[in-house]
Amino acid sequence: MFRSRWHYALYFYPMKEEIISIGDELLIGQTINTNAGWMGQQLNLIGAGLERVITISDSRDAILNTLKDCLNRADVVLITGGLGPTKDDITKHTLCEFFHTRLVRNAEVLARVEKFFLKRGRTMLESNRQQADLPEDCTVLPNDFGTASGMWFEKDGKIVVSLPGVPYEMKHLMEMQVIPRLKTRFSLPVIVHRTIMTQGIGESFLAEMISNWETELRNAGLSLAYLPSPGIVKLRITGKGPDKEALEKKTLEFEQRLLPLIEKFHFGFDNDLLETTLGDLLREKKLSLVTAESCTGGYIAHRITSIPGSSDYFLGSVISYSNAVKIEQLGVDSTDLNTHGAVSPEVVEQMAKGVIKKLHARCSIAVSGVAGPDGGSDEKPVGTVWIAVAFDDRVVSRKFLFEQNRERNITRSALTGMMMLRQLILGTI
Image (tube, rainbow, N blue to C red; front, side, top):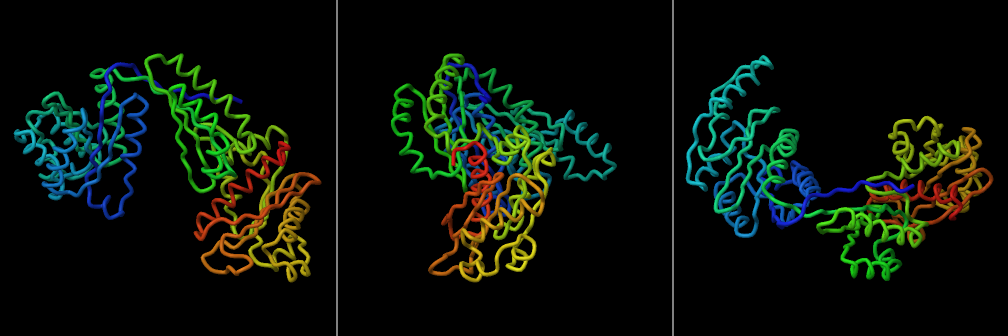
């Protein structure tokens, strides 16, 4: 079923934006910079042209030099971080230096900060009161969720916005203050995205498969991005221009031409999860599912049961990590284990059939492999995984050679197993 999430804005002036993320904790990897990613998504939704994200230290020189450099290129610079009450938070002072202004105590902000502490029954220190000291020449953006206000500066036709680094405070100010102001100041282009989710095919093979279609897409003024992650490749079609309806129509036409080319590998749109689309199929067909997991250690069951309502179709799992459990709980033949090893089609197929029999289901996913980083051999190196899926009387097994990374091997095994079962139920394998 076609599902749509169109995003667009108005058209005219191409606004160039850059983001400066301030914080030593970001540079050393102590904190992951999720702020910049979220801000980029929100700016894209309104058609803003984010061109660069820069992470810098909490130092005067880094802030001054980076800000000057960004304003040579961008119309709008968004800054996050360095607005707390401690001495290492120097962004306000540095911005005063850059814009040749001074800090003044803002009575309205002070009252808001006092109310913030009173409401929580906490003692207010002088450093907290200093949160109301703001650059005289900025527009204050009230922060309802914290004590650090946002600051909006304008100079020589350029805009600089400084926001707190606390994610929920930054998001609140972006949504309530910054985005609405940018939309009134700039006439922005319509941008339309459609994302098609695929599993079971690598980026380069996918590109070769749809090469002719992609050439026609680009000739029509649309663009395509390949967004790979372990086990998944997203295809994002993007259109940009003044006419929302025309862009939606053109993008939809190309999407519909793409789907038959990748039917075997396509499982959803936008941010659909494979465990969700598989669950929807199981519910629609009134099928029950169980798993028999060795190298994935229950990860497939975890992903399936992370979806609300999965009890409608998921019965349970046997974590058969040892050969003894494979034999005693799943009925795997000990001779086959000794002859072929646990990582073999003979064993994984018996696991798939055995768990169906034991837990009284109609479908199963079974996995046995060498996740790593140790345990591999010349015959079965790290990343070797056998996966079997069963649906009623039919069982299909396949061998995969993934990577040297244990975590990615487990993720790819889970995704591949779920996709194989989906294909088996739909009759495409």
